[in-house]
Amino acid sequence: MTKQVLIIKSSPANEFSVSSEIADYLQSQLQNKNERLAFTVRDLSQTPAPVYDNQILNSFYGDQDALTAEQTAVAQPSLLYIDELKQADIIVFASPMHNFSVTSLMKNYIDQICRFGLTFSYSEQGPKGLLEGKQAVIIASAGADMSMPEMHAIDFQVPYLKQVLGFIGIADIDVITAYGISMPHIGSEVATRQAKVQVDHWVNAIA
Image 1 (cartoon, rainbow, N blue to C red):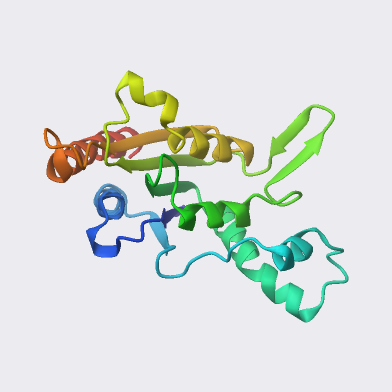
Image 2: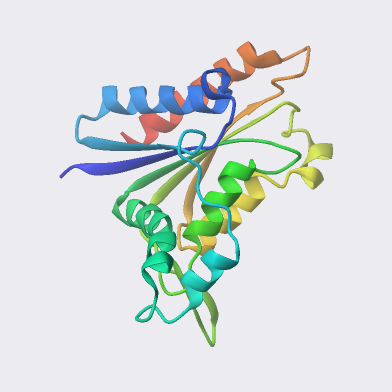
């Protein structure tokens, strides 16, 4: 049976993006290991998710049986993203750090996929994610070396993405890091090479 892999890129750097390069490498390594994989790549720099505003709010939380044609159209990107997540067996979040957290491209996407009744629900026991049984990997890049203990307190990227994934029901999460891209003693080339080694280990573990 063919497994579905969804790759979400969120860097505005396009061809100069380290996180996107590592995501491409991960895709190629998976393809080499397993022919029974189908890939969907959503590059948010090419097709950005809509910015959450009042119109979207009303479309998401208004009476779904009484939406206007305009409101229905406004909600369509969200439903497309959520359907892609539902269909996926493996979800890859390629995320460069911007100002200690995710890019605005990624944040806008997350605001579209976290929807009550579609990807999470509430009960007396609290929130429950509805996208269970999936595997996720976060590719996190950063200019600084966020692996250093003194940097953990200001890392609002990986903990945030883990929280979001857990919130929508995805508990099986791995992290691949490319840290120190802007640091003289590491740099982009070394950080990328180290991340690709992590990709190789991850692919071999799941193939």
